[in-house]
Length: 128
Image (cartoon, rainbow, N blue to C red; front, side, top):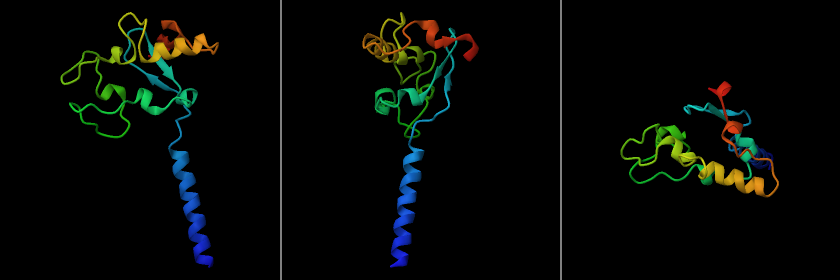
């Protein structure tokens, strides 16, 4: 009986540790490489968005090395075969009028939520 209870407690603790490990990182990440300056990205502020929105499934032409790769593992400054989308285009179009990040920020701003929608609000030279 005692052994069963101890095993059950250990399992519950392990599940707690695993759940904690899957939470979004709390320290901001600096997305570098833009000539306009790096972007400070805080996963914790995006916790309500499903990971798959940004971290799309690997394409058949580019097999993944791990479950969650850095965007720059596939998207480079200049698209290199077999990739067709360069790094900037992975986030927004050349005019920064639309795209993955800016579309979401504009939608949130339209709801009255504070979301940066101008280039310099995300791209900062000090983040280089």
